[in-house]
Image (cartoon, rainbow, N blue to C red):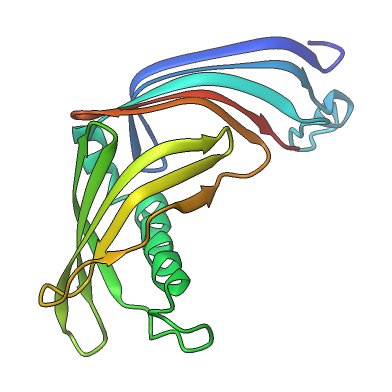
Length: 196
C-alpha cells in the first residue's frame, strides 16, 4: 500500500443499494490497482494510474429490479433505450425529435430468456399511454447484448413494433461471460476494466 499498489480487493454484498439500484447479490474482485499515493499524501483526490481489471457476478431478483425502476440511473437509461429503438425504426426521424415526454416505468417481469417492461408515457398535451417492451435477451458477443425478439407497444390500437436483432454495445471495457434470465431473476457474470 505504501507504494500505491494494491494487489487485490474483494467486495461482496447482499441487498445492496447503489445510486437507487437494488442489487440482490454482488461479488466483485479488482486486481493490480495502482493509485497516485504521492498526490494523496499532498491531500489530492485519489486517482487510478492505470485501468483496473474487475471480475464479478451479480444476481438481480425481480422485486429488486422493480424497486430500481424509480432510480434515475435506470429510469433514464430505459427511456433513452426506448428512443433509440424508435429512432432505429424511423418512428422518430433524426432532427424531428418530439419534446421529451415523461415516462414512468412501472413494472418489470423476468421470464426464461426474456423480460417485459411496462411504463406510462405522458406527453406535454397530457395524453397518457401505456408502453410495453417485450424482449428476449442474450449475449451476442462478450460486450454486446442482442434483444431478439423485440417488440415495443406504444399504441394499444396498433400492432406492436418489431425490431428483432437489436444490438446494444456495452463498450470495449466490458467482457460478459454469462447473462441468464430465468423466472424472477437475472444472473450476470463477467469482467470489466475500470478506467482512470
